[in-house]
Image (tube, rainbow, N blue to C red; front, side, top):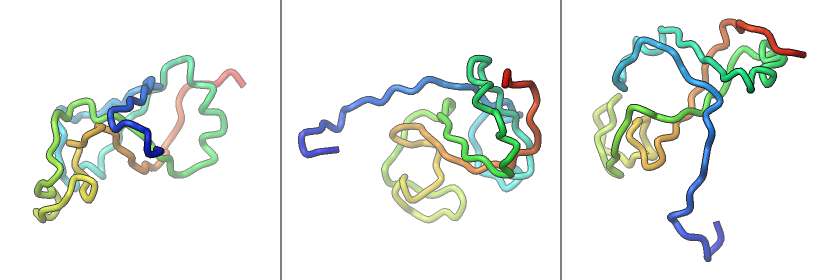
Amino acid sequence: MNENSEASETIEMVPVGYVENDYIEPVYNEEVYKKVSKIVLKEEFTDGLYRIEDFDKLYVLFYFSKSKGYELIHRRRYDGEISGVFASRSPHRPNSIGLTVVELLKVEGMCSM
């Protein structure tokens, strides 16, 4: 941002897919890391998976669709310490965007390549 930029700028994103799993509400629990979720891409983006199996791990950028509101200072879920929202793993964020690293277990479906 330059000095003339406004904080109220918007960024538009288009979902390329969605995640399927058993979670109804956002929770912090070590068991989360043992469960398998499925990422389903929209048909028009599947060609982008070409050679994805060359990787063991993937970065997944996602929208916290079930999280509403945020506080800039709060108690972290994993250790109970007070911190700023950007110094935590809270799903309650000003922009509701998350990033995670996942293990690629398998790829289903075919690309047209």
